[in-house]
Length: 311
Image (tube, rainbow, N blue to C red; front, side, top):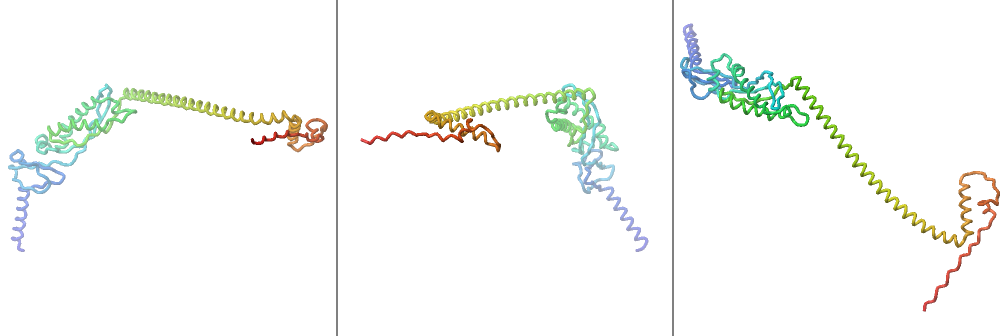
């Protein structure tokens, strides 16, 4: 290829590149672009891809970050509904919801995202957060007897701030979280004393419940004991009555045969005296040892009367 032809090819490539640069623009997937025609928005914001435009000064393209931006508010003090001071900071996730409105407010800034947060959004969200926290008591944030209402409070702040920032600046607030919560020393002491009093009250309630339960169990045990004793006494009386009734039969027999009764008593006494292996030296005439020398008493059982013949 001759030198002249090479120069022509290079010139054509440069010309095409300049034309593409002047008449096209590219939007990345993480961006949104606003096209201005003589300083006024021309149609809807451009999404990701390559687009055509007229060269400046006819048209101008402004690129903005379309990703979710994470920002953190300052650590500031406010008051609750019941008059306690608290120190809070918020974590906020926001993004551009209306690129044209956003461009009208921040489009000329060198760093529009920083200006949007530091100059406007932080103030709006802080004011709404103070207003919402001013409607809640300290117990909604710090409590030992109920679950803190963080989710409800965060949603209230998000709803209150989100509608205003979208209307005024074209910014959509997606996330609001209470990142830090601290209490001044005076409030900390108050909360500690209240927590201590609540714990003591719970302990006293548990103690009273235990004492009541113990008294109930004791009363039930006493009632059961008396019932069992009454049943045992009744059973003992019944057995004693049966024993007395059975013994009465033998007493009648012994009354009829006193010699047999005396003999049996001596045998029982002798059996008790000789339970263990031992040597006993006694007078054989001394009861009950005299049974060894006495004859068994002759017990005569009276004959039963004869049965009468049937008529």
